[in-house]
Length: 502
Image 1 (cartoon, rainbow, N blue to C red):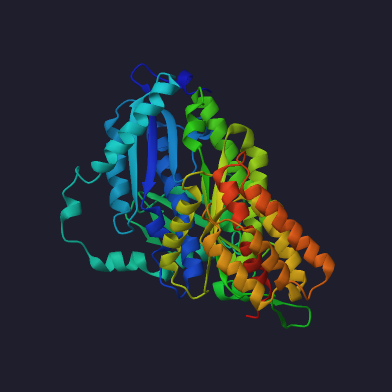
Image 2 (cartoon, rainbow, N blue to C red):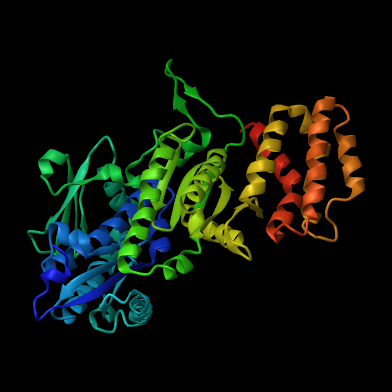
């Protein structure tokens, strides 16, 4: 039954938006010991908060089953939009207070905003977003309780890694298959986390087998956070230690460093502005959720990514992955290709930042590094990759840099100290259009390669020919010309990493 047909004379349709803030600080505010499970648990908790908030509102307005599902316009990206019949908007303020109270020790805020809906998408989405921004400034004005002395032990409990690791343990694919959302029999509005359940705002999430939970059970395998690599710690991911058939460990070749990959969708705002109805909005949101869950799940299930990637979060427009640095670079390229295939015609692109760090690097700094890398990738022209402090276009990375990296990596004689010294020197000067790649550099590079196979020399010199030509091509974008200027130094650097011991 359509929502409009279920309205009584005293009820009107309202759009209700829930928007989580404080997400980055919440996920990564963990101690390094036990960080992998803690950030996983915190990430999944964000989805639970969204689900519990929607369940609370839908229960309040009396929608269940198919009607409840039809009321969900958007449920991704740390936010949701519902379109529901509502007799008294003041009820949403009551829900807001309960949610804010429940989350007060976590550093998270879920802001609820609402506007009447008369099926005029263009004006309603504008007003709804304006209300959302306004409500964020008014969040704590409805209660003096938030300005009183509080029990610091509760805040300390919420910050412990063990608290959130319990959620990670509960969603492991070899532990539970489903979970269910029920009314909390103790009607406790506070946050409580045990090994088998999470209680928040009067609801309880119980983990277990699907049959034991009944027909309301939600499958965990529909969510990327349910994927756990065989290597359970960041250190194991870096060294790529996997048990072989003889009971020993196999070590990966090359630099043993952790890769922190952040990806973010570009031009999402303009794409949503082009939408003409709430039904079209819901379809757009469903397509994004399908890509960032089903499509990515298929990618991660195949080699070389299977059991090699730690998924921290994947939402409606951003993703965060951790793993060995070279796998993360390959994963970034694979996701970029799949995303363009799915959304390129809609004018969407995806930017990425890949940071290479030590496996014991403080996890609390991951978010800062990721944000810095993404900002570089989006600065000026969006839809590019930031790596090793440089921004390159996906096209040049895939068609030029990666093939040369492979060539240099398989021919270790090419990676001489002189060649790398020259590459690093050019990395500092070639970004300047006035400098670029000079003719003298061309012959110097040939000199450094003088002791290698003539076919290898021809390959590298042909690459330099293309770089020189493309770096000055006015028909290319600024980022593409810049990418060609740094292509050789970047390829040489990556090849060096591939061949480094430890």
